[in-house]
Length: 67
Image (cartoon, rainbow, N blue to C red; front, side, top):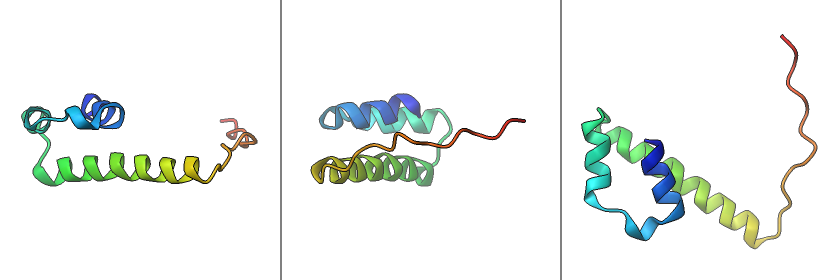
């Protein structure tokens, strides 16, 4: 899944049917493959919108609570 997501993010034009087949071989259903592609696509979309509008990255994240 991570190989698929990385490839779709970095080089979407190179995606092949074999990339989907690799997910199916790993046990992902067609619905799973669709969900993976949707999440990757959404983040690419949202990041390009933010970049296009010049939105700055958050730099003042709160520290996670100690356990």
